[in-house]
Amino acid sequence: MRDLFDRIIENKGPLGKWASQAEGYFVFPKLEGPISNRMKFQGKDVITWSINDYLGLANLPEIKKVDGEAAMEHGAAYPMGARMMSGHTDYHEQLQNELAEFVKKEASYLLNFGYQGFMSVIDALVSKDDIIVYDVDCHACIIDGVRLHMGKRFTFKHNDPDSLEKNLERATKLANETGGGILVISEGVFGMRGEQGILKEIVALKKKFLFRLLVDDAHGFGTLGKTGAGAGEEQGVQDDIDVYLATFAKSMAGIGAFVAADKEIIEYLKYNLRSQMFAKSLPMVYVKGALKRLDMLRTMPELKAKLWENVNALQNGLKERGFDIGTTTSCVTPVYLNGSIPEAMALVKDLRENHGIFCSIVVYPVIPKGLILLRLIPTATHTMKDIEETLDAFSSIRERLENGTYKRLSAAVAAAMGE
Image (cartoon, rainbow, N blue to C red; front, side, top):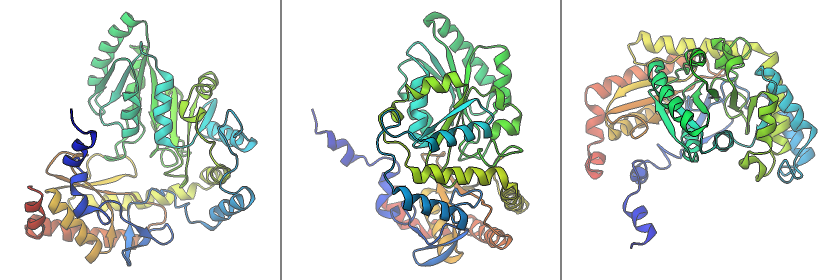
């Protein structure tokens, strides 16, 4: 027998082992100033490409006015208690009704957080006799939700309809033995690669297999589709998504989330979502703020138009300069480079210190070893000047990566970490 903490002390994990070199700069950085296209990092002005404020709502005066008035009227606490006990209001119902109408579903239910809510939705929808089939690249909240499942689950290769069909055959055989059903889970937009989920192809398989489809559309809600209703609307299959979930943390620049489906399903979830039944209700400041944000999504299409003007300019500019941005079909803009973790650290430091560019860095174990992913999130607040400066900076750092400059600069760090 050993002390439980021995393992934790000996093995910090694939990311934790870099804490002494990375914390405060590469991870847990502190961006300061109003949320916008340009903020401050360690006292320096930087162009920010790491803020999920797609439509640029976060710092608009009309948004801050509603948030401020709601805080003054209700404080941060109201309503107190869980929704089922003492935390229910007309405003919560109003927001739910408006969200359901916006995403073209019969009903919706508010969730305190997307991550927490998605885990709980999965847990509530399936029993031990049911089978889950999900895309191997699904978000961590889905993986954690699936881990709660006491029955069988299968993964299918990312966005691969043939792999999905094979796993549906396995799931169907098993479900016939257990007497259960099948839940397929995918994403509207995969947040790292920027690819839309193959929702159209998944829906087509409903003609051959009996299953229900659950979609996490955190990055698609507000950015895709004619009205902004998301990836399902974009692909013309919104009606065929059985359970739709999105968060306020991206396009709505807020806190909270919602799940939408047929009335009967939402009624069931209301009484079975453990993360909502036993947690404090979403505070009024977030509810009223979300109502205002949703109204702007509906009535100001120019926000989404400006976002996509910037997305197209950035992504086309990167491709014209020979950068690999994968197969993104959304606002999420990944830039793939080859290099080690120490080289990635040197590269990002150069970007921030010498070029004034702040973007997220993704390395192993999130992506395979030897790859560096720089993820850029364009917003409606970015300018063409921001984009041009960023393109020039990326051309510069690629040259230094390829000529070995970052390898030399990072040699001491690599040696210390045994890389």
